Amino acid sequence: MIRLPDGGWGRPLGGRPSTHILKREDARFPGLIEAEAECLALARAVELTTIDAETVELGGYSCLIVSRFDRIVDGDGEVRRVHQEDLCQALGIDPSGARGRAKYEQGAARPSFKQAARLLDAYATDPLAELDRLVAVVALTVAIGNADAHGKSLALLHPDAETISLAPLYDTVPTALWPRLRTDAAMAIGGQVALADVGLEDIVREAIRWSHPADRARRVATETFEGMATAIEGGVVPADGKVGQMVTARIRALRDLGGCCRRRGGRGSRPGSGAFSAAPYGAEGWCLPARPDPPRGRNSRRPGRRPW
Ligand SMILES: Nc1ncnc2c1ncn2[C@@H]1O[C@H](COP(=O)(O)OP(=O)(O)OP(=O)(O)O)[C@@H](O)[C@H]1O
Ligand SMILES: [Mg+2]
Image 1 (tube, helix red, strand yellow):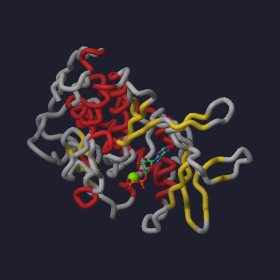
Image 2 (cartoon, rainbow, N blue to C red; image 1 turned 90 degrees about the horizontal axis):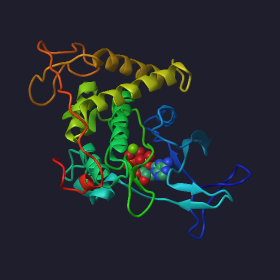
Image 3 (tube, rainbow, N blue to C red; image 1 turned 135 degrees about the vertical axis):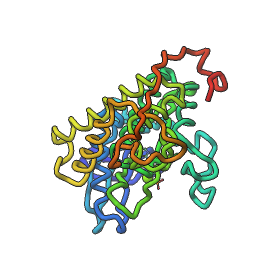
């Protein structure tokens, strides 16, 4: 769709770039469009997206209209495309593979946050800053309870032929509000698959897999939670709405666990270790060692030079 100067909508013809995308609500999940718009507002509040979202009723359907993050509007109103590719495209994964499940980490092709980090570390102009953003994206994904953050929900922007950056967030669905939707994280976080069991230290552990410093990751994730809580308190989304209440509760649980150290209880799911479990820790507690910032710069940015 194209936003017209009079505020109306037009259809792009003759290869003209569109400026907005319309998403129609799936009738099986009433309220999902509103909830996605609220999560986009939270993402905007913590600077993880730039896109504007509005909900409208069209032809009897609830719809979400989002501005495109892959467009630049010049001073004279001319719209230019910015090249983007989602993580599956960047990794050469055909999302229609594995009967449509290849975009999930459990699918055959296995897109993962670590793969996204590898690309950003190799090709971004400022890899540390990009990996911080990726940590914040993971933190927001946990806080909004989005188990459907798969390989097509993350995108890379190519501002020029040489570099990439993490695109603004665009697919922020709080699946936790719909019990019929998947509860396993589409891409595992620190080895933790059950999204409800992901805690702050799982996010830190995920970042360590990218060779991103633990203390930095812990700080970025905590700041993301704080920023989201402040946004809810400030009325960015209704605090007493479904999203506001659910995200507030999740962040409270994540914060309560945040300052503590715990010990790994064994392989796989660790009941009680995550943000939303009744018993927060095992008996022993464990601590991640602080690590110095790894060397960065053009020479360390080539693929294969870092221990993935
Ligand atoms: N604001 C945006 N700007 C540019 N491209 C976008 C934007 N929003 C969505 N897209 C593109 O449209 C695709 C589908 O959008 P989105 O992921 O939000 O829909 P979805 O119904 O949740 O899809 P899926 O079933 O893959 O999860 C994205 O992979 C992305 O390429
Ligand atoms: Mg989606």
